[in-house]
Image (tube, rainbow, N blue to C red; front, side):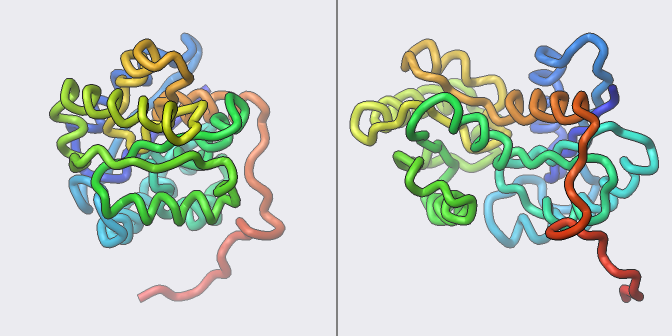
Length: 235
């Protein structure tokens, strides 16, 4: 089995972090490559960043199909460009946010979502609404750190994460906590030990989801939502 993980920002530090976490959980028979584009934003902290990250990511998806990967994981907890990627890909494209939401639903009644800075709360709420999961959302709380800070300040991120996640459990009714950014990769064990509830690292969860989908041999349907785009001239 061969899986490609695309960190859709250009940060080599975050890409290396994700690679290290994935190498620790992948099956022995799974070959995995973890890459990032050479062009685009160095972190994803806004809708503007997401929009600029999509075109170079789609080029990597095209190449991954030519290279015969069994599954492709878009490694950002915003699922930017996922619909477009699935339209152009015969290999299944796994969306980090979508996959993590799906797993959270099996582990408890309501989930709490940690995010970066306060402005991202509205965007995450919109994503939850789009997925039809508002009734399963306990709350969203912001760590007050940028994406770059989450990767560069692990101890502070964990400290704030434990504090906020505990409030989500005790005050908001969360039974499962989702760490809503790939830059938090590798932090879930500490939070889970402190809180006593499932804490989902989206990098781990979505990668294992990708392995499972690749094992089944299925890919996304081509007859509706992910129908291939019509040929046309793009200038």
